[in-house]
Length: 445
Image (cartoon, rainbow, N blue to C red; front, side):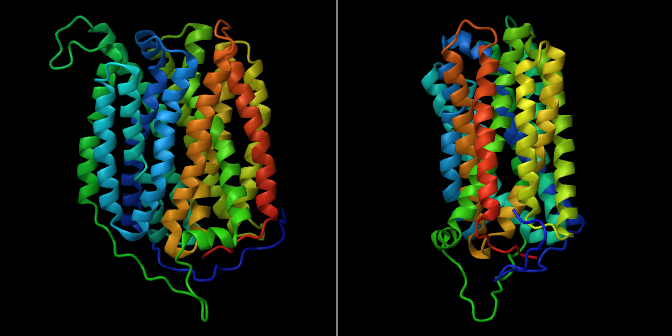
């Protein structure tokens, strides 16, 4: 990976279309809030795994399917047609439909009577949330110049990190409240289990967010300007085929890093409950707060660092930073497995969330900058597909299956997280090195 050259402007770029003004930042904040709500609906399940497991008599392997395949497979697969819509239809309307679908599906999770119904509800949460990322990436790209794009994307991605941590905190408080009032005649939901009542409560914020998105002004998209004598790339297949090794190694390499984040978010609450007998509200307040603080700090550092690096002669700063993250995370995962008490475990988890958050905002910006303008939404969808196949499907599911091999071991779940994360990070390091040496598309201004 060379560090002594800069990236020339991309052919067919749409330089200078973004202004990055106050209203543009307000749009980013609205998208941040939308992402936050989606992540709360997604990750609240992690805190409720133990009561769901008890009520439905499930194994860790089955829980892994609920947290991974049921949501992640549909989220990842539907991201491709959503990216197609993002390139050809109203992004605002696409996001609005998605919010309505995942909000109703979250509520449906709360009235599921068995594992099959619950899995179906989680599938539709994935279907709805698949609409957000490709549309949000395109909206932000069109509103900001290159030297601000890393920060703008990182601010948007804060919604995901806030939502993941906030899910633990809010779900813990809500579950504790409904658990305390289990015998009370609550209106409409009095006969449901506390975890079911929690899902119904978490679906409510979708309503005001949907109204805000519907009120958002959608700017007319800028025209695509191609270099003299160059035909525009209008096919996703053609664009991917032209630089397949670069895209494949970059997408899967970063996805293998992000897998560790998903594995932690999915299983850390259960680890604290099993190994250290923490309650749901203790996990929500401690681990949830930790995720929010550490991840936001990592996003700020990542976005600021890559924007500064982009002004220097460092080539491919996005990949360089991601490679450093993979190396540091591998060392931290080893410490995670060796931690002897809950406090040390949380300290190591905080360091992991900080380090692994740094590329989460910058890589979507890199995808936008390195893709032909006509297929940016679709290429972002391919990236979302890779991240979620590895992170949301493979990661939690593999951890659950490995843990099920030692069902009576208190530390078996943590060891499973360490095994899956270590193998994934080793693969990420190799893939990112390949991406740095592959023929790459030049970056747009």
